[in-house]
Amino acid sequence: MSDGYRLVDNADLTNRNTFGIVARAPLLVEVDDAAALPRLFASGLVDAADPALLVLGGGSNLLFAADAPRPVLALTAQNVEIVSDDGDNVVVHASAGVPWHDLVMHTLSLGLCGLENLALIPGTVGAAPIQNIGAYGVEVRERVHAVEVFERVTGQVRRLGPDACRFAYRDSAFKRDPGRWIVTAVEFALSRSNAPVLDYAGLRDELAAMGIAAPTAMQAAEAVIRIRRRKLPDPAVLGNAGSFFKNPIVPNARADALHAAHPGLPMFRSESDATRKLSAAWLIDACGWKGHRDGDAGVSPEHALVLVNHGEATGAQLLALARRIAGSVQERFGIALEPEPRIVGADW
Ligand code: EPU
Image (cartoon, rainbow, N blue to C red):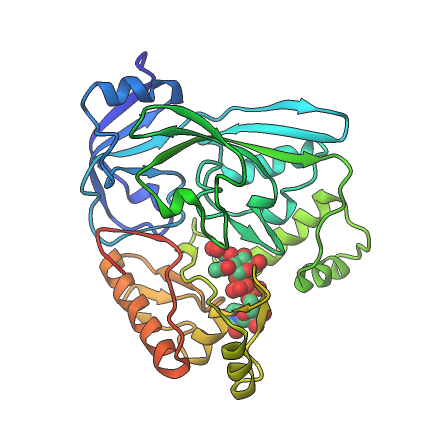
């Protein structure tokens, strides 16, 4: 304990992945103090440069298709502090182990706007920049001030600004190069005065149903929470990892052709004017998968993009179902779906 980390041999990871898949790791290292990472790697127990070394956050974006082949790290520190405040613009520093939704509610309770659209997303602060979490019109990259990382090969501690993080839709430098950094803390640029972003149509509708015309950030978060509770299964009740596939991004000409053939297919703006983002949920729904079950591996009856574990599904069964879904979307629409969660123990 005084080393700043704790070791668990032959660790059970079933409660550490939101799919609730039975999986083990030969060694789990719970790192209570990120400053202990150099000491941990110097101990020889864990090889910092091993690309198969998995750093676990809330396990909410992970599919164990097999046991973890190597040690697994979990960063547990949960500190949150304001590091700068000019009266309006406030930078909040949060360590990697803070549960994401707790940070959202804590900053809102301090009167800070910025994270309200991202309420109720499962996972930890450390995982948020890795897949650039996003929901209801906001991506976390729009709020990231800096990301503190431990660089695994050099052993250096670095602080990366948003450009160095190379954020894109559900993507970042951390995701593209998983063996390079361990995210130890994130700084968020928040504001006392900004109005909530209400571009996502369903959000305005929800607020209207709540009788609110000019919402505070806290009220916007409440609306997001109501939508999420209605649309997305709670992983504490039914194992899942949120959206299993990314929304596909296609060139405009392809989007136009698809729209002509399927006028109901929802399309959204993408990062480039030359492309559009399609609704993977709609494509999967149109292929008839919503509510489908193969034993305990299934597709949520509430949302076609969410794969669920009805009890004792294995990661391999969920992966097999995901491949069948992607195969049918490919066959019917000519679109290659890509999984969103990290898959351990198998290639997509
Ligand atoms: N739709 C269907 N069938 C369904 C569900 C949805 O046809 O079963 C269609 C509807 O037309 C709906 C559209 O898909 O209007 C979009 O659905 P939704 O608003 O739920 O958003 P999404 O594109 O499916 C994305 C994110 C979610 C995020 C929501 C809200 C991805 C991969 N997913 O889902 O993020 O909460 O937008 O902003 O980008 C996650 O990443 O795990 C996640 C849940």
